[in-house]
Amino acid sequence: MPIKKTLSAFVLSALAALGVAHADPLSYARYDQVRTSDLYLDLKADFGHKTLAGYAELTLNWIDKSARTLVLDTNELNIAKVQVLNPNGRWNAASFMLDKLDAEKGRALRIALPFQPQKVRVYYRTAPSAAALQWMSPQQTMSGKRPFMFSQSEEINARSWAPVQDTPAVRFTYSARIEAPTGMRVVMSAENDQQSTGAGGWKFKMAQPIPSYLLAIAIGEIDVRNLGPRSAVYAEPARIEAAAYELADTEKMISAAEGLYGPYRWERYDMIVLPPSFPIGGMENPRLTFLTPTMIAGDRSLVDLIAHELAHSWSGNLVTNASWKHFWLNEGFTTYVTTRIVEKLYGEEVAEMNLQVEQEEALASLPSIPAAKQALVTRDADTSAASYTDSGLVYPKGAWLLRTLEQRAGRETFDPFLRGWFDQHAFKSATTDEFVAYLKKNLLDARPEVMSQAELDEWLYGAGIPASAKHAASPRLAALDAQRTAWLKGELPTRDLNGKNWIALEWMHFLNDIDGKASAAQMQELDQAFALGKSGNNEIAYRFYLASIKAGYSVREPLNAFLMSVGRQKFVVPLYTALLKNPAEKEWAKSVYAKAREHYHPVTQGSVDKQFKK
View (cartoon, rainbow, N blue to C red):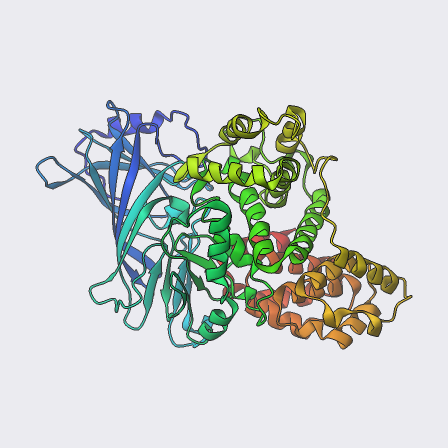
């Protein structure tokens, strides 16, 4: 890779060796010295070579007036050249070097500077194997006509498609011009012009400052439908009508959230339903949430996923964890807010069921999580991601802490308290210590009876769920439990179960509770009575398949179709894990994965590969 030697190689080597500690161990960026305030991307998408190529222009805010090095995060980027904007308005070459590759963090790009420029340009090309990007062949799309590409930047994969300060501690505005093949639409986590044709390149602008993990792009055969005055959904043409039907309540959700936590500050809330290989349920990219098609059930029964991603518009996007050590500030808060939105739209009964299922799944996960990883956050210095806590448990546990505070303080006190947190920290990054200081000043100092320091420490730093936690108890789920217990004992015939009247949450609760307890014969009867193997609700189908595998009831035919068409990690990884533990299914699982693997996102492939290696 070419290095313009306007400064000596000796100086560059010395700069690389300086490695001063900074607050985010997953970033090389020295954001105590300089911060990106704006990013401009000018890129061309090449589906033949599976690359994005062009340049990134970073506008810089210099904090340390003696600093003469800009350090950016990269991963597998082929850097062609770096330029700096001189005071005379001319762009001149700058010296740069790339550190040795780190398997987790990629490479630091160190740019040596004779002065502190306002702008720097990095010319580069991504690798076909870029961790954030999935390039799909036409055969992997619904129409089979054109290829598709989408990104997933969280947590530290933005650096695989743009040279940035890849840390949630740094926020910047951005704009872009993207060239794509004719007949394909480009969308980004920014202002999307529905009338654009892409002539001269697709242009975007994000006026609100975001962290790098919220950079997002998708390119493909994409249609759009408006849902309301400030919301729309994008999807492949064959899916657009189903998506628009499923997401019809979006505008109501935005209004419900605003009523609780103040104005929506991102202007529009659009969504894109991606191909099935999207590895997670949703990604809260501002102005354009990315969604899995597995939430399309045909009856709007899984829209709590939308409520969750919308809630991120306050917790996560508006107020962001300063590093991934404090992940619970994003997801614990969002999970709490989700339940409040669901309650406001669909009533207390549905919200209470949702909450009980959430809490039960959290408790069921504890035996598989090391005790040291069960805290919301550790007391360890933020020097290594190895010390971070379990990223799944922080969702329900963080929400449980906030709900405990709400129950004890009362909503008339807690709701303004939480809104104040969002208002006072809007468009900023925060740590747990900052939240604790805010909590004490704005709630606990005046109401110490709400929670003692010892109990707060137990929630934040202790294992499991504190014994003082109040468990959600839904009367509807209690009635269902009585039926389930009798059914498992053989005292209640399958035909007498009230399943035809259960909503999705009730089926999820029922299937969670019979997992590993029901017999093959019982699973067969359930399937015959309620056609669970053919359920259009992926949350129900997944749980049914999982319980069937453990019971020894063969569901190969529908499961094969499911694994070939769904790439969501939450479903795929546990199903393959269960199949591999069943001696009768192990070889079949290998044959399915051999065919299905190419349809999965690289993140999902890596997770399933680990299960096969075990």
